Length: 110
Length: 239
Image (cartoon, rainbow over all chains, first blue to last red; front, side):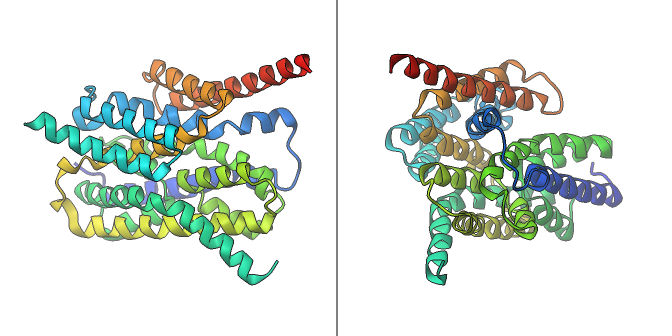
């Protein structure tokens, strides 16, 4: 069952406007002022602090398998990590990861 | 700065971000399909995708709408998924802080995981870039991502549910984030912050409204900064 169209539009507008405010927050408020060194030191780690945590549950407990750990997805994640880490190749890691996912699914289905 | 050199920074950003078209395209397609299945019409689907440009939050909103959650909860939970972008916004202040208001507004609109991650990697590795060069590079990144996000969402909404789930497109996003992050882990502080992020996220996964992600991110940033300080003091003692 789906919500009615008023609810859908309220969600679209609320989410669109709210997301923009989040994105603009620091760029808008802080602007050209210098940030203190302790703050910059923390900001250097934003990407590695957010992205791994965001995906860790998705890798271990994927929705597609109703939260059960899935060997194909685990192998794909490990392959993508090692290609990215050893070869410094983001594209290679992404392609290698998806190909090993399909490869594992093919092997396990036979 | 001459026109030709600014153009070259634009295309450099476009080129560095273009591999992610391979990720954004299937994910956008999937969003269009899922939104249509969930009962959104074409205009609703496209308005959401163009206003929000944040896949994970859009999927969260759809899932909660299907669960008949109260409107307020749907918006708050989906916004919580996007709170990480406040940290991206802060991380971009040292680079874009002195830009004009209109450019900061535009840069905010185009702030997505891929443009942020690729741009920040570039700025770290090339500290001589000027404000204009950084901005043009960033918009080059956005030009490689956002039009494909809109276009493939549209395609997905038009194709509807004729795409089989056996393509496992759900896993394109985790793979994308692993691919972006892995090459960043070459030094100890970044590695420590990533490990703390993963452990805390998994331990606190029971927390509602994506609070686990916010806690994990804050602790992981602190861990990275602390490790950096410890390495620094140790080196100073040796000298």
